[in-house]
Image (cartoon, rainbow, N blue to C red; front, side):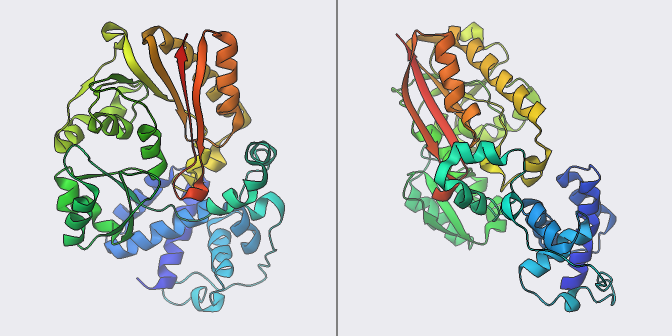
Length: 381
């Protein structure tokens, strides 16, 4: 496919997404219907689509409308490419541009921040607001977690390099490698297939690394999801139970644990094996710290959904406290940038349960390189 044909395909996929289709479904369906497209074509189209979703407001302004065509026209204008060369109408290229003026985006639109969330994020991030929003307009780096139960970071780097995958150590979390070359080879590499490394954001790794664990600590990952933090906890030597309100999310966890050489206990009745030394609640949240990876989520979030999420977060905290051993640790984590999901949630919890003392509280910023995360740890007096 030519570069122009790839843009035309991205326009088609974006129109499906804007009409309500999930991004991954739209991309998968397009690929199945157009089997002539090679892996390089599909990868390029995917990159176009996700870049347009990350920068939906600003590209729509530059392109003159919130349509697949408007977004891709805005993307070409934003990157100062030759519009006429891409929108030529020749072959499989998009039709030429006629009377489609754009405008320079201003305010929240220039930062691709939803208008209703702008004031909340400004209050939450202070002087870092604009810098963080610009960081979220860019593609997320790819990070790997080195499985410390099997290898050292330097050895994992060497193993990855044998498959042509270049990496660099992340200085602020000692299990993390940033992939600097050939990221698409990761899941077929021997280092990945033999459990030496796992795909995991650096800030997500830092959350687990920040938890104090005694030898053979009994840990419950209450909102395990896909199990990235579950595996990271087990790699630190903890005895880990994994639970999720939607067990299907953990379907791949046994295979991943076996590949990593780790033992995980999966449970839907965590109260039967209480108490736990540490309970990690990586709760459902707005995902505002990880919008680079899920840009559609930025635009799908509503005030009603945010209110519902804060209610769910409070309920989870209240639910797990009887499962923590006296003197144990309750850890609360989000991949959110919003104070109401983070510090304010913890303050409200302490108001409801004054016997719980805040031990640590920390934010991880996208400006560090990884996703935005929040972590608070509490113990009962």
